[in-house]
Every structure is written in structure tokens, then in C-alpha cells.
Image (cartoon, rainbow, N blue to C red; front, side, top):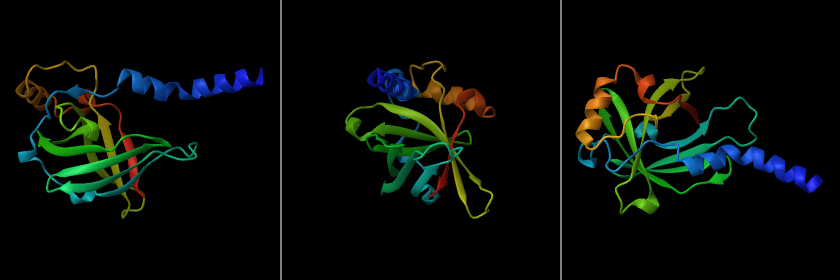
Length: 173
């Protein structure tokens, strides 16, 4: 009976991670929202970032971002011990929003991207960097062309809550 309770507890605690893997909670596109030729590079993104938590997590999620080319980043994301593959990303600014085009390094030969946005803020200590990363909502329409997607996000750029999920806040660590 004790083994059953441990298994049940493990299953319940694992459900969020399992559902993320199964459902693929990212807005995926065949092509990046913007090309590498007009990508922007922000040195401020480079470094190690730790997810702000309420203190209940013994090991919060973290990511390390490094530059790998003049306009590209390598992102290693560690979801509190559930190591994921490294990602490659580039950023395009469209209608005032910084869009992060992310793909797994195992998919480098394929055109398959997930879209996020980022913004910077200052913590309680003004020297502390805070980075907010938001996933584009999966409930948004699927577009046949990049131009349709760019037009859509441009139209709703003044209302980012319509385009993006609630953000994950990271502090420089």
C-alpha cells in the first residue's frame, strides 16, 4: 500500500510536466516571425537567469543564454531538474514587441519555431535585472503565411495580453 501511495504522489506531482510534454503548450509556426537577416541582438540577455518563485520550489527553473553568432542565441533551459535540450533562438522586433523565435537544436534542419516575447524590468534593487518571458497563446489563429501572422500581431501589438500568456519572471543569477 505504501508503494501505491508513493506512486500516486509521484503521478500527481508529475502531471503538469507530463501535460506540457504531451500537449506542447507553445504556439508553433513553420517559419520564424522574422528572419535572421533582420534579427536584433541584445547583450543584456546573455547570462544565467533564475525563475522567481514563491519560495516553495527547492530548485527553481533556470536558463543560461549565450551568444553563438552575431544575431543568434543558445538557450539552455533547466526546468527544476528536468533537463531539456538546448535551444537556438533569434529575436525580431515587430510593432514594438521583441519576438523570440525558438527551436530545439535537434530541429536545426527543419523549419519549426515556437514564439515568445520578452521584456526587461528592474527589481527591488535597481541594479537587479528582471526578465519576463511570455509564450504566445496557443488559442490564436493559425496563419498560412508569415505576412498574415505579422499583420495580426501588428494589429494587436497594443494589447500584449491578447497575444501572450502570463509571463515567467526570471532574475539574473
